[in-house]
Image (tube, rainbow, N blue to C red; front, top):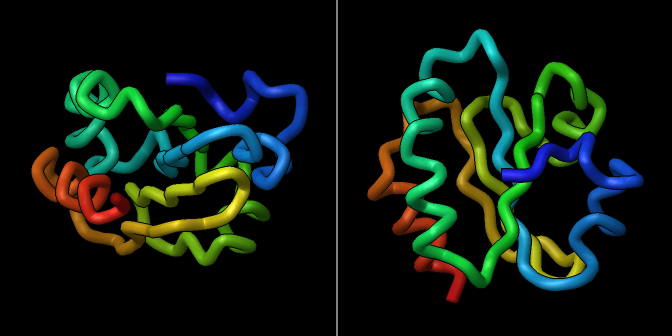
Length: 106
């Protein structure tokens, strides 16, 4: 999974302008984020139409605020720069819940 830092810009509109993206917001101290992280490579493999981008919520606090990310882990989906869905709350997320969210985007 790429990190938001891997891009030449951290502007979400620019990063997500070509194709489908899912931003995965988490933080190093977050136990619920650590719970879902082991499943992320599998989820990525199952949804090759999406590019997954990890966003460290603490490092990009202004972006998290701008997008209304108050709880983590959270997922925000984009298609050609436009938000198409979000799975944002403070609850622990299971692999099945994340997959249900992605499936609901189609």
